[in-house]
Length: 141
Image (cartoon, rainbow, N blue to C red; front, side):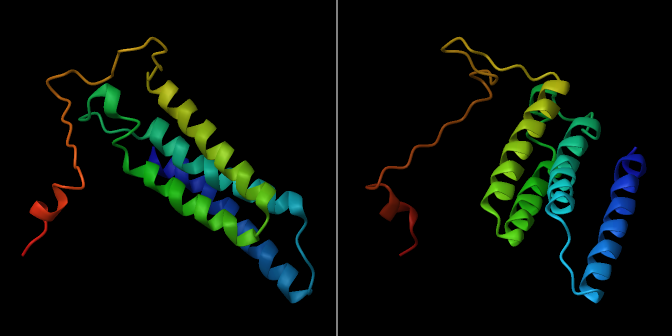
């Protein structure tokens, strides 16, 4: 499954690398549509991994959150800033958020719009509150 998911992206990235190297050799710029498609496709990769490669050992409600592929969003969103185009960066963020929510919905997550409900049961929820006065107690002498 992983090979089927990552394989097409590897081929796409190789073709994009060839296009960038060709543009550098010809001293030309790549069109904006190529950069835009690259940013959007790279942002979709982590969402596809979250949706299609979850661990069966993780409880269903935690699968969208406990998937290590979700951390790849940070890498690809950070890489989108290298183009220094605010519109591209904003679109990358919106695409990442939308694709993550779609992946979570695919895994069965449904938002609760009624107040006072939680995905976590009270037995599993743990809350830690730090007040400024308790911080000195936590620091070593």
